[in-house]
Image (cartoon, rainbow, N blue to C red; front, side, top):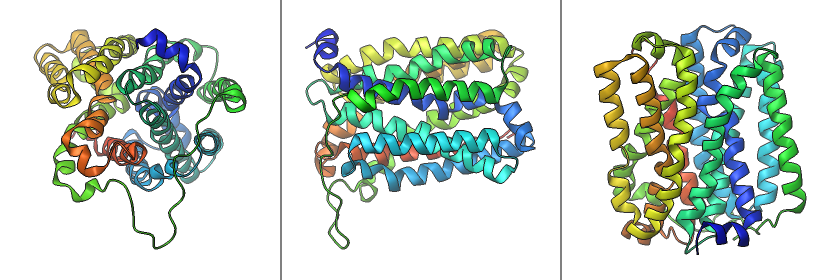
Length: 364
């Protein structure tokens, strides 16, 4: 079965996963970083204070993912999506309208949790749980939603900022997303929840990777890229200044990063299906390591482009390789990952989200 057949037979389910991943752009660091200056001014925070607040809410969101992520085991995906969308809209309203920084930071936390956290979790879980033989390719197609956001939104937002304020842009984007979600919530073929909520005192079923040393060995592999890329996104102005480049070049390079993820997503899914995820995961950080060397050695516009493209290539495979590694490698047999992929996604994406709060601040 190829991509064409997959799209023809499962168009509705893949549309849900794709839109969930695209919606996560609202809470992704690359999107929030575009508005770091006006958000800081709105909340009356310095760049360093904003970075600290961002790190704290990201860490809290990561731990919340560990708690809330497995709920998709027993909550129907449609209801799960509606709850997350309502919470995401509440976060946008708090962030853009609140006159008090405390409520604004709370809104930022909701945007991070429900955007990057729960929406990505929903898209990955549906693509990973509902497909067996074509799981890698389904995850690749769903992951293209994030790539579309990274490619389309930075230049589009930069152009629209000429005519609209940052708050109006957020509201407009939220309205567009709502218009896309309504038909899917009403007509799409949503799957049922695979299990029931565990009773109080009932022994926990499913994977318990925190008790497996292999999980802790994999954590550095999962955390390296989120930490470094989040720092680059949030402190883009500092990065471009230190490298001797400009924000205009950064915006173009950010779109280039989204395009760089495309071949990795499509071919990465095929490679996972054919070659195995363990072999693929061992080398997926190599492009970013080369990009760091180029940025340090040459700097300038080339350094910015190298960091964005070099970070985009492994990011595309990151969404496939480690999760698939936990599904089908020998480790997954001890975690029962094939039976509980949604719990593994929550456990996997929680550290990935929370680790983004561990990035260094300016001057570190």
